[in-house]
Length: 326
Ligand SMILES: CC(C)(COP(=O)(O)OP(=O)(O)OC[C@H]1O[C@@H](n2cnc3c(N)ncnc32)[C@H](O)[C@@H]1OP(=O)(O)O)[C@@H](O)C(=O)NCCC(=O)NCCS
Image 1 (tube, protein in one colour):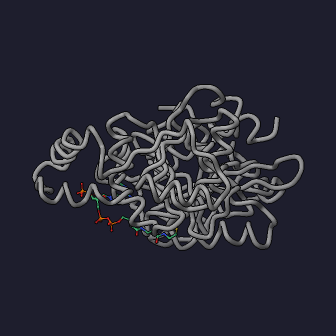
Image 2 (cartoon, rainbow, N blue to C red):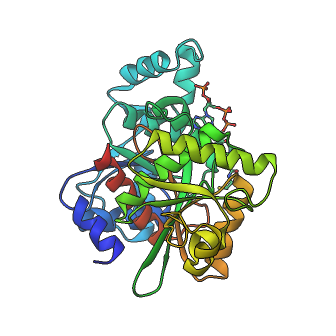
């Protein structure tokens, strides 16, 4: 089954509610109306009713039966303010909360925290920081996960060759412990896409072939990850060719159960991760889907500002599927 057919099969008619804080954007409205018409999820549009209606008319979309929540007229506003102050214990006053919750990303994140929606998709007009920060502060990471991270699903060709790359979006220079947690979360994310996780911890060294603190960090992270999740196949440190090419794996890491057949590639820090996925995308002809934020208690997804309607549609499907994992 094609990747998105399988995800759609998982979420269809489950009535999964997803908040869209950028509901006056034509790409968001277009994707939301398709998702609703196909019964893949129940969009909850956030914003001023008149402005959303005007944008919908301009986009040629009829909004009847859509749930629209206007932060200026929300019947659970006081409860939301109180819950936010409680969640941010000591860091935000009631007055601050009243102001911050007028920001649609904070509002949408709180709707998700309160369980009104099961996830949120934003970022088509907001920066990564503005989209993700409320989630880090309110939704927070799952027990045992100290950092959220951003994975990219890399898909190529008609036979749907699939890999997962991470972290390509969030943590500039993770510690060995953080890198280990990223590896374990990435293995779980891979399973969501029916990828059998074989996790390669990437480096410029294979099994001690080079010596440097950067290499030691990856070797240490490998050890921690193996201890954290003994049931997953996780190995390192591996160079990309040793991880990917069976012939090179035979020479450089003959005893590894991951080398030569890796499906999940964990990069040692953000520069290599971000550069790496873009090289695969531009040179290798892979479609890069993401970033898919992993490790949060509930799924919050950050669109690129360059996204088109199809990107919004796809990331929303992934977000709804992640909600089912929780
Ligand atoms: C994600 C990012 C925006 C966080 O923003 P930030 O506002 O600088 O974060 P702060 O350090 O002020 O922390 C805000 C809160 O989030 C938490 N936090 C920050 N990064 C986190 C992470 N990766 N995982 C979990 N929590 C995190 C902090 O602990 C803090 O929580 P607290 O307020 O309850 O104490 C920042 O890490 C970033 O800009 N990363 C690079 C993103 C980027 O440019 N990517 C490019 C490719 S897309």
